[in-house]
Image (cartoon, rainbow, N blue to C red):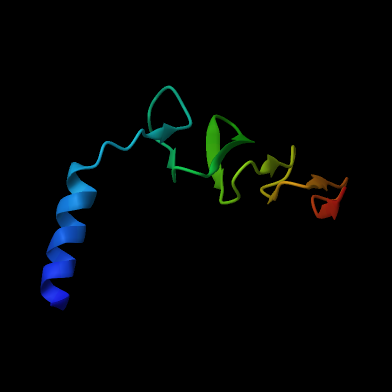
Length: 78
């Protein structure tokens, strides 16, 4: 039974129509479907794992929805 579930998941994942979440025009950085692309400078991008996350400018951090970035790059509830 476990093998059948594994085969189904592999088949489903290979054949599903996922829209790629590409961050840059060179198509180098790709984030998960619900992640947010963050410009981390010098033409590089990172992925914020929060749905509707907020990228903290000048830092390699991000905040979840309902928070804002502080001047030190930490998150503060709004």
